[in-house]
Amino acid sequence: MSSDQFRRATRHERYVMNTGQYPGIGARSLGLRGGFDALASNWWVPALFGLFGALISLGWSNLQTPTYQSSSTLYVTSGSDGASASDAYQGSMASQQRVSSYADLVRSDSIIQSALLSSRLPMSVSDARSILSASASDETVLLEISVENPDPAVASELVNAVSVAMVDYVSSLETPANGGDPLAKLTVVTPGSPANEPISPQTLRLTFAGLVGGVLLGVLLLFVYVRLNDRLRDERDIVDVLGASVLATVPSEPPLVDDLAEFEVGGSVAAESYRRLRTNLAFVRVDNPVRSIAVSSPNAAEGKTTTAVNLAAALAESGSSVVLVDADLRRPTVAGRLGVNPEIGLTNILRGDADVADVIQATRRPGLHVLASGPRPPNPTELLGTGRARAAFAQLADRFEYVIVDTPPLLPVIDANVVAQYLDGTLLVLRAGRSRRPDLIEAADRLRLGNVELLGSVLNCVSGTDNRYAYSYHGGVLDGEDSPATHAIGTRRR
Image (cartoon, rainbow, N blue to C red; front, side, top):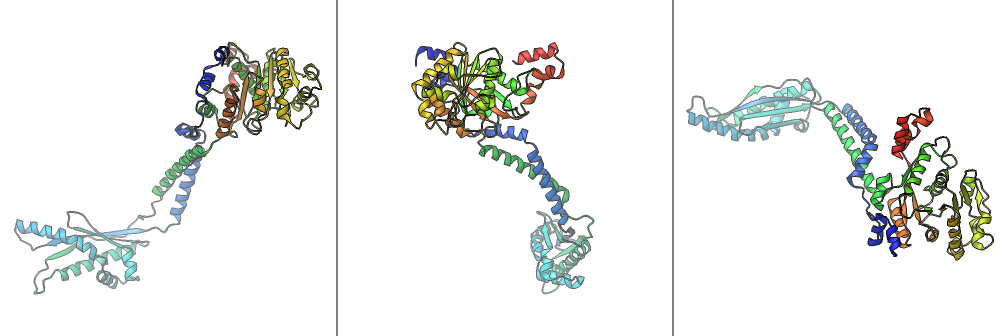
């Protein structure tokens, strides 16, 4: 590389030349930043999931049969009345040892059958056992028996019947074989009573849990989507791959008319985007300004031709002489968009049928000329790689201040790389929500391998860009309020 080339290179190009790769190439994950960005712009997703979760939980709760619980508390006593303090302590320890055994005894067949017989409740032993539970608190002599049932009266009746059966059974069980007082006894401290409120379903708690669970699920899905989605959404996604700033972003609304921005009478939001591109291109290489530019994209339908046409119009608006060349010999569209004859153009020059001056056509826009594609050839790549092609682009650079060349996409064919050899560099056009990170990586690699300078990128169809320019550029012009303050803001933005 010559010293002149090195002097003209920006810091980004120097990095490419020294390392052999574009910064960030190969990175696929947007990390937490991408997830939080997606969450900020799509907050309604977790909100909607949360609403659905709450409604599902509420509906499920309303479909459940309410269950009521009734509980009774029994006190375990061991030893005889009037014992000494030492005997009382030993009796308390014996009661604690017995209470856990009594808790297991509650669900025995003998106790349940006795309770059902005394209460005359119409249920089987297995049904009663399924709704009956007992627990003993650690280091206490209290036994708690509980029954859960859709009917609060049934629950209360059964728990009291089981409590009485336990008192009788323990009394007979703890009575010595040779007679005398029982060694331990149970006393009902708190009998069961019908409950006023069901213990399940807990509608409020379940609804809140469904809301929180839905929100968390929505957030998780957003982060997974960002992790797996490889589409480019905003400028920062491109910087992650190329390590260089985006020269301009073009909003998706309002749509362009015939793919042309309104540069007249103050222009439009899209027109300001292309003016920004025009201005930023002037700073890409300050010492040796860019004059001939290839405009391409990784794939078709990403906005390269629209960008080429509007960039040429923006340059012509500044008073420069501009020629727009349609070098997409496979699918030419420039002539149709600018209303010139598509049958004469670049192909005629490459075949030796005409000179450059013979096929350049003027447009209705002052300063803007077009070199259409001409007849479609069977061998576009071979034609573009000839010495006539190199000489033609050199003549165009001598005749015009700016040469803007619309080329085919980079990935399907190599035509864009061939044409870029004759120009100062390539402008890469991407479309938000459509262009993919792997395609951008491959396109940048192809430019690097072809020793083509990547001047920068343009991101099309960016949502939310309109408001960024609406006030500073158009508040006064469109609304009839061209105040000094508005003019100053627009000047600073530029």
